[in-house]
Image 1: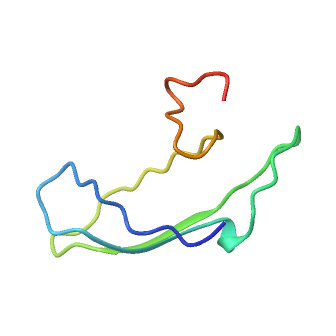
Image 2: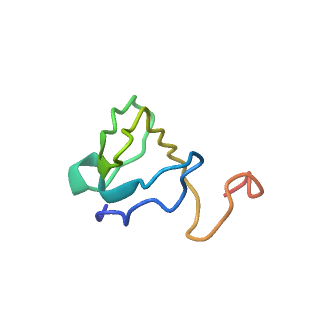
Image 3: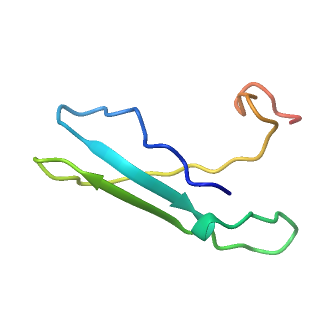
Length: 72
């Protein structure tokens, strides 16, 4: 998996800047029946500090909305 561009959402007032996000060390994620540990690292700054970050991972075709495409 390639490096992902910085996030665009900021629910709180601030000047957050996401410089990079790396999923699984830049390697492909192979999905099978075994449990997997997927690492996510983010480099971000905000003059007022950053309290928390949250990541969601789902599987589906490119461009599909996973909430409206349950068979994807």
